[in-house]
Amino acid sequence: MTSASPMTESTHAHAAKRYRPASRWTRLRVHPAGPVAIMFFGLLAACVIVGLVIPDKFVFLSQANLTLLLRAIPSYGIVALGVGLLMVTGEFDLSVGAVFVATPFAMAFAYTEAGVALPIAILFSVAIAACIGLANGLITLKFGIPSFITTLGMMFIVRTAAPFIVGYTRSISFKPPPAFREALVGSIGPIPAQFIWFIGFAVIAYLILNRHFLGNHFFAAGGNPNAARFAGINVFRTKLFAFVICSVFANISGIFAVTRLNLAQTAPQFFIELFAVAICVIGGLSLFGGRGSVIGIVLGAAVLQLVQDIIILARLPGFYLDMFVGIMIVVGVVVNQMVRRKY
Image 1 (cartoon, rainbow, N blue to C red):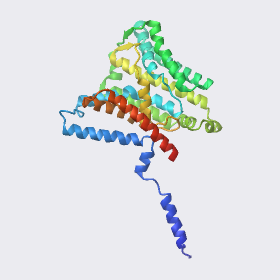
Image 2: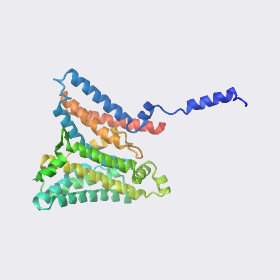
Image 3: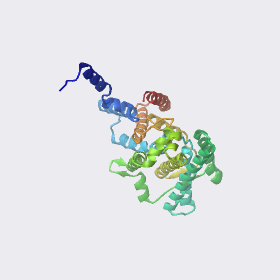
Image 4: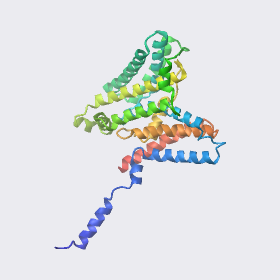
């Protein structure tokens, strides 16, 4: 048999070196959730070390603090799941903060004031949220208006709708049956039920995005809409469904908040929509669509609340959180752009 020439062996060795599979570290860095995973576990490790060294001054490891942390993560996290699914399609929704307030208020009003059965009241609020998402999608897609503008206008419309109907200072006491309240915002052992619900909704979002054809359509519609149309994907219907999902997730998060507080009010909750977008950007989602992961959103919500917890425990001024969010948005956009250009 004729042996391979030295040149052939050299060529094969060069090709093997050139096309060597990427290391785990490289794969982690280029994964959408890679940077936020590194950030989260780094912060967590630092908090644990400091908590062990000075437990009296930095009570991070106390059961009360950990319980509060787990209870706080879903507050923005559930909203961010819906916003993230929509961002994958290349669209935004700035009305989620208004939906978060107004639709649970409608549920509380129907249950407390009108005497409607609680399951019907919940479905009523979900239907309102779905209609708001549907309106956002139809206006954006039918008329070619940027979703940023459409949902900004919808935010003001929804925010003023409930006060206009029932009065500007109106708040409603919401006292559902104890079993309902315990199921939503109680505890299962040391873990808050709200956190378990958040993980459940994250699993649902993951199944939609990664284990269902709809998720493939989301990525295609956000990455390259024209190519998606040529592939037979109905981009209009895909994005419309994402708008509806986004509003419904905001409604669900609002229901948890109203149930926990036993109070629904028309006063706007500012920055919910901005924090939700920030969580998604921190979690590695692209502002241009077509890239992202549910685990990134979950870790982004955890990082945001972890930083807030550090600020509180260290007795730092509250504006440090806003500064961190602003820095992370800018850094996240820069990292996304670098990854897009490289890969």
